[in-house]
Length: 236
Ligand code: HEC
Image 1 (tube, helix red, strand yellow):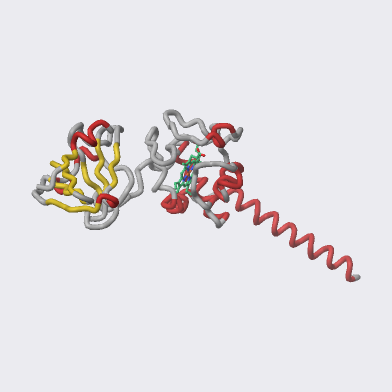
Image 2 (tube, rainbow, N blue to C red):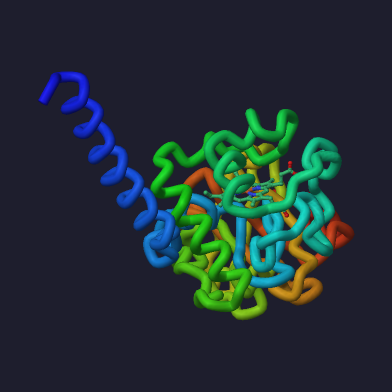
């Protein structure tokens, strides 16, 4: 056999093997179970519960839907609203590889998922969620005093129920229903509102954050109007 022919044969065989391998991969089409783990990188900003919008929109039913159109999400960037993309395997792969490059000006401040296998799997997970084939149960986010993320603030334990806040000098004193008072530097206390169904009862703000000693404590109110009336200016 002359050299040229042998080479040709060898590469033809190699090509067939490669084609077979790729074909098999395409049939496997991503592993939603592993994708649910990759999704841990997203849960700080996204829920897969329908209508639960956080920093980013709910990803409950995105499959084959136009990007930038989740009902009730009020914070899309102009860039994403304007762009004409239908969310599917191909577009999600580009989006998740590098959001800012795919949609310049997006407000999704996320560097992207580097490994293409991880992207394929998380996309398979999002598809399964959309098609009702994956559990919509939220991955655990940690205890309510530990973490950000959505928790039901109407069920806060006494240590989270704020009974009064006073401000003196540069310090807030936050008294909770367990009888304790925490003093927090004013620059370290975040005052937030949660008007969703998970938010606190009107007039019953809740403190969440790193044990309140840390620098990440937040007091969450039911509505903005409550904030200044709740906080008393006093040094007693
Ligand atoms: C730091 C917060 C943050 C993280 C982390 C994040 N996202 Fe986002 N995501 C956003 C925001 C904000 C938007 C809206 C972007 C805009 O309007 O430009 C968005 C939009 C999206 C959209 C478009 C949805 C629609 O309705 O058009 C998809 C899909 C998405 N994100 C998937 C993911 C996935 C999957 C991950 C994890 C691998 C992830 N995101 C991680 C904040 C985040």
